[in-house]
Amino acid sequence: MPRFTDNWVLDKSMFDYVQGGSCACCGFPHIFNIGGLEGLIQSMSDLETDAANQEIDAAKMSPWPEDMRDGIWTDRLLLRYRMKKEMRGYRHFLEEVVRNHHHDGDDATTPIDIKKAIPILHNFCTKHLTPFQLRQIFQLPRSELPEILKTKYKIHASAYAIVFCTVVEQVANFHVTKYPVDGRRFGSSGGGCDLDDAEVEFEVDLRYDKFGPGFYIGIIDKNDDGDGATSTSGDDNNNSEECCWRVNETVLLRFLQRMVSLGGPTLLARAAKTSHDNQDDSDDDDEEENNSSTTTTPPAVGSNVPSFRSDRRVIRLLIARYWADGIMEKYRESQQQ
Image (cartoon, rainbow, N blue to C red; front, side, top):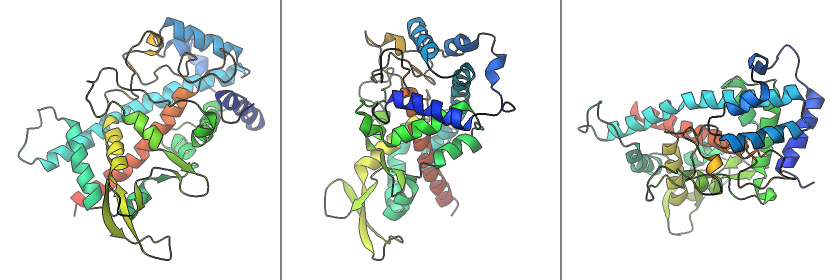
């Protein structure tokens, strides 16, 4: 069986669950769900009838024990619910950036176009932060993601925590799977919107170095007098010699577009409706086509193997939020000086 495919996630999660288990005192909240497994899946408002039925069939064919399977679906809902509540914080920050820049602009009751924060934050990152500072921000050890799930979202000692850790490993080695990109575009936005491809471009830019920083994006390059970069001298404290670095403005711009998309209106982008993926589409995209076997990601084995595409998208979203939080912290520090 090829490593890091969805079938590998399925089997490895089962193995880790059996080896480590989950104590009875932790329990699973699904026991209070009268509808059981089908009720949990049907509560995913983005899954239309056909897609939900296919996911139910795949879940029933899964080798996972019933308590593990239902607990995973419950915590998937819980994580997305808590993440969705945080979206307003990112929007408020972006509105704050625009207001700070346009002191004599619109009053507080006038809607603010948060996309106007992109050039402001771009100027802040290139003029007020050194390339070395940016490189420090855009790093995330793989071990930090399960810690975020545990401490920030209070999901731990559960079957989903095991699946989450396994999918993080899959994301780190995603290139091995040969799957197409997981990201989707906003179906409701205009064709010329810069945010249309924000998730896809972030996914493409995301890299992983097992022996280095972990997850990162190529936000800086060695200054070799190329195009598309801003040159700034900075000291790399991790090297014995001082180097001259440059900011990769293309990568920075794409991340800032992704950062703006964190403010909503949906948790994850919703693809434009087409004839073959209508069943994946919905108004509420916080759990869009959640792990549905109807996604474009190839199933590992057969049609009854669930897809972990939606879990991978959530993990990449957590990474983007982690780095956005770093930019937000630096910006607010600069405003207090």
